[in-house]
Structures are given as C-alpha cells and as structure tokens.
Length: 286
Image (cartoon, rainbow, N blue to C red):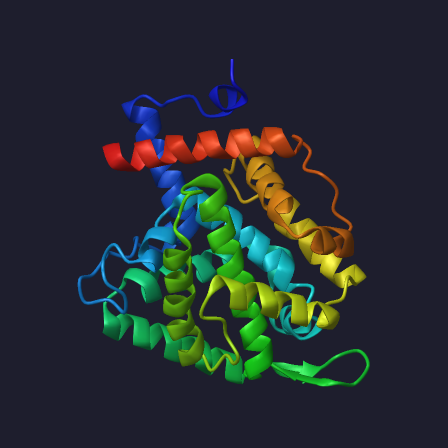
C-alpha cells in the first residue's frame, strides 16, 4: 500500500467533508466566523491567469508557504521584526494563516477588498521597527527587506506548484506569474521585485550574501516545522514540512541546520503529491 493511502485514504463523504473543513480552518480563523475568500470577477487578476492558478492549489500553497517563511527567517531584518513584534512562539500557525488569507484576498478577492488588505498591512508595517543586536536599525517598511520577503514567497509558491501540480508549466506563464505577483509587491512598496523567473533566480543569488543562519533563525525554523496546530494530524504536518525542506535551496538547509526530511526526500514527495491529489478531489466534490 502506498504511503499516502496509509495517511490519507480517499475519504468517504463524511471524511471528505471533515477534511475540507480542516483545510479551510488552516487558511481561515473559523473560530471567529472567518470564511474562505470568494473568487471575484472584479479581482486584481483575471480568472485563469497564472497567479490565480498557482495560488489555487491548497497543498502547493501550504508547502510553498512553509518554504517561504523558512527562507525569510534567514534575512536578519525580517527575522528581527518577527522576534520583536510577533507572538510567533505561541501562534506560528496563526502567522501562516494570516499570510495565506492575505494572499487569497489579493489574488481572488474583489479589488476594493484587496486594496483595503494592502493598506492594513502597510499600516501594520509602519509599527514594526527597531534595531538588530549590532545596533543596525531595521524597519518593515524598508523596500529591500519587503523585496526579499516577496522574493522568498514568490519563488516558493511557484516551486511548490511546479513540483506538485504542473511541472510542465510554460516558462512564459511562469514569467507572467512573477509579473502579476509584482503588482501586489509594489503596492506594499517592495523594491526591486522580479518580473520573470530568470530575474527571480538572479536576485536570489545576489542577495545570498545578506542572509544569516543564526540560532534565532533555527529556533523559528523548528517552530515552523514542529509546532503542531490543534487537531492537525502529525503525519500530515511532517509530510508538508518535509516537502518544504526538500524544496529549499541547499544553502538555506545548511544555514538552518536542516537535514533530509524524516520521511526521506522521495517519500515526502510521494506522500505530498498524493495528499495534493486527494485534496483537489475532495474540494471538487464538496
């Protein structure tokens, strides 16, 4: 029996509904009545455009979101902002959920809602500033810091989509994805941001020298990978975390002190791919 069949067999109607509810709770604070963002024809991006296709796959977005956050924590300014202004130790899952909801609103939501969400984030960023341990000032409104946060997210979401959903996505569509996502990044005042896959790869190479593998970055990485949200199946969490670590560039794994996923790289890929197929099936039936 395949590993994914052991962890996530094709569900009955009852189990399917429970699975969909649990996944929706991952992206929405259901305890406060928050509901999924309804797709709008009057969004920032047209239906069936690359950004909407990439951001539509639940499993790829979860894997990409974890990978992106791990990369971001290697940037000293982004890391210090989290350490100084976040309750991440108590609620890492909440941070990931808020990021996922922002992505959903700005990708699929009505334009006015997307604009309001961007303004809220800009206002929050105005309050996030301080100094690094060496006395260097940092600010969440710094365009270069915002640019790296965006770069980590965009490359991670696309990498997971290519791995688990559409490996044959044409390069022209990949470039369009970066151009579209750059629209949101610039509204957040990030600069410079890539408008093609080749630009994204070049920018990541250029910015590697700014990244640091500190004990604090490793602490956040441990929480991202091992802090278990209430009700989350531990094997599913290990699967998603293993898939994210597997997708990290080797230099990032080394900086964070991460080894091959517990399930093994091939096992993590097979299990995550199977879970993605199960979730896509479950959401189509729901």
